View 1: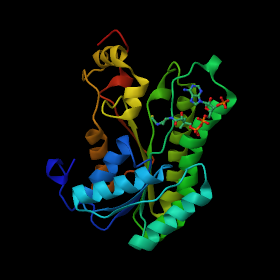
View 2: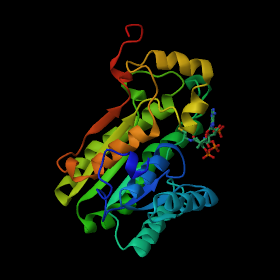
View 3: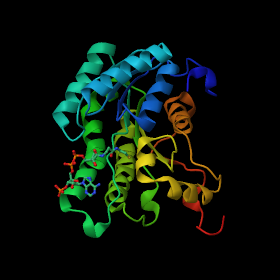
View 4: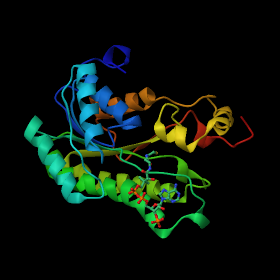
Length: 265
Ligand code: COA
């Protein structure tokens, strides 16, 4: 989504600087692109150095914005501090953190090792906490801060083969509410987006093979998967002044999937 295709004014995010974990691919690459296209400066981070540097260069060229890519594993708190430092050094401030780094795979509980469960909780949940801690001082200092966590709807019901990711995302929702309460008085809003099935992501292609995807889409009230741009637009709204009184909220963007009873749509 370049700003011309967005419903928002082109300069609506001017003056903001965002750190986006998991920004090399999928939904968070889309959020990075949208933020850049609307005037924010962006640091994206992921484990893969080459990928993250290439994507930062691509996004800068495509949007005309300023992006840097710095490699870090969100399981490593010190590496995240280094990413925050690099962002401050380049852009002079940091007022926004998007926690998007996530790992997932399909596994039945009975076949999932303790380490497998912990690995996903470490990335999705502990990684969110680690990044929030690493960015806190910079975001508090900047004023008008925002932490935006990418959650999910998996844990609203029991989701087969997803016990690890469901537990992790339930924790992300708890972190969202707790930080909103603790950091609201310090001028930091904390919200989450809970995407449903988003069709044009690597995760969706991997986790929902062909036939299952068509069946799943048929059970969604809006009868289709969402797009990365539809999540990115919500992320732009939450960073904008239009959301200045919004904190502790989890925005479900799922075509109505999580409120329907399968078989009745
Ligand atoms: N099924 C069952 N267990 C799995 C698994 C799978 N498909 N993939 C990983 N695990 C388990 C491993 O078996 C290991 O546990 P064990 O040593 O007891 O067997 C544990 O998870 C750690 O795996 P490892 O590959 O060493 O961890 P990692 O830190 O390198 O990567 C992930 C973990 C989750 C990120 C990895 O699955 C991955 O790279 N996924 C693709 C990227 C991705 O998930 N993107 C997000 C899309 S939503």
